[in-house]
Image (cartoon, rainbow, N blue to C red; front, side):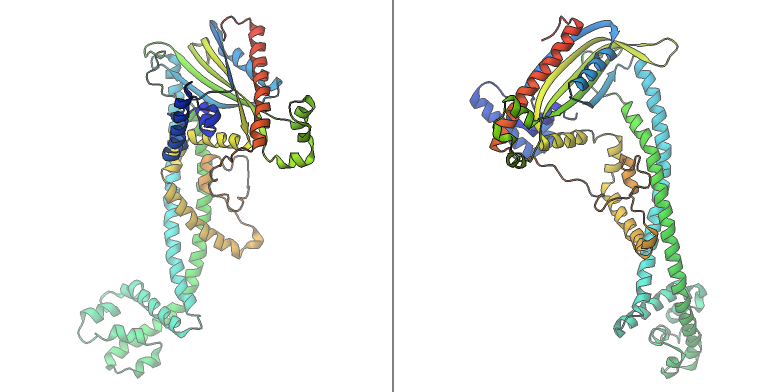
Length: 500
């Protein structure tokens, strides 16, 4: 089970948001042990065990079997916008009982998405195998071309080594087609021709053959073979370079096809994942034969601490409004409101429509936090990591190493060609990043240098004295007031009797 947003916040700033016992000595030990756990087990593992708390928490309970969840949700959603805390949905889960019609309906839709994704992934695998074969062929061609390049070297030893290598290739790939009359077959299998291979390797032209101490029979066989080799040497280089360029062009087209297929498959994978019910083992409200659903929604809204306004109110010293002080304050601070909805209801299908309405009990928790720039970015990063066990990560992460190595090989060939055609522009796109939406809405967007690299871990720098004793405290007092106002507005507007 992935860590919740509250647990992640508690792990980011355990001094403030990790819940400990009331006893001071015990609390100190619990906090120390938790910090050690973060270092030893890692952030995500530690976050799963975190006991979280907030600056302040308000809870309301709304229980109505006849009214639906949507009005409650959207009233609070709009209210967050009205008080300048624009909401962002960070959790959207559901669990329905196997015996419910809702489970069967969404299961059918998920199956359709999975079948479509499987079909396209089959095409992805076919193209991927083709790309692998092309890459290996290009590597072979590149090695062969290095021998031809060495023939033009100014160093005689490099020229001689290249000629010997090419002669070996000619004997193994071309002359071997003659069968029993090939140089190797005659030298190794027929008496009187044992010196044929050595003579062929040492001779550069027909005149060199005449200088060798060989019998006439061997010379008569050797001269035409030397002539054939020299003719092959001239022609094969041109043909090999043409083939090399054609293979690179084909590689580019296959990479574009791979990118296209991965773009096509992403919506189906995402839809299939969104239609998956979240497992909730041991949840007493989910009885298999009942027609029951549990929805979990979380909204997060933030509002930046406006230092000049706070100075005018008198909550911050006047020196904070000076430019010198404002330049020293490198991090912004945010008042954050998190709204957790936990809804238990009975899904009812609307007549003659493929939609459901939900009436039941809703528990809504209003929680207040204060996060600085680093902490907020860390929260966003860890929330993304918490979702990395989904279908997209299984596809990408299962072969991270192999895809990474393949990507380097592909880029080495495509960039080589692009260097020769700088005037024509180049496509530096990475087909594998299309799986995670890198190219959504980008058209022919170019990849910036280093974009293929994964972003580094965000490190939350320690707070300065001013941040801790002024900015955080002011933001905390502000968010406590705002969240109570929001809670009170909803309570009075709806005449809520069951609240805390």
